[in-house]
Length: 228
Image 1 (cartoon, rainbow, N blue to C red):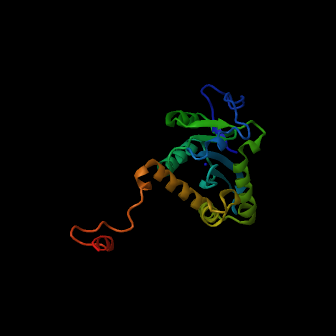
Image 2: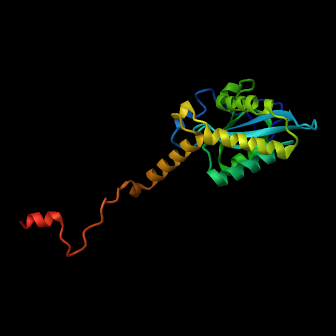
Image 3: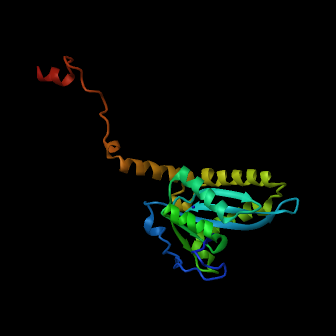
């Protein structure tokens, strides 16, 4: 997969979100494990570059596999940019069953609302001031902030992108998670994909014979014993 969300048509930025926000334990993620994944979208607030210019990071994490699906640093992230990045992600990973985010302006934009409707992806907002309703994403953001953002001097956007990419690779491919049975997010996702493929193709569950059938005319130990 805390973030920003899409505004229903005709809604002002300051108005209350009309959709029923998910409560913790009712975002659909727990009950949907084994089905389509639930992506959680969030935006880390602006961080300074060495030049003084500030940048922010759009994070998309998977609530099931704990993978960071995308981490995009840039000086400006609009609703159109969010929609574009989600479309790119869907082409690569498939469509999630649901997206959860906070009420940030990027996510409450008409661009994101239109994208959600066009792609038939349910988008849910957490309640204002309740970041732990998007708890795993908030935990991920805090880890990235403590381990990377607070410890690194970024000399420019390219440098920030390189460092974020490296950190995400380490997080996905090298860090075991206790909640995943001490597998890494990448390994756990690969195992889920392989299991899903086998379930969708029952023929793959049929084991091949250990040895090839005996060619016609060739005797076996069994036939020799039967012949005496």
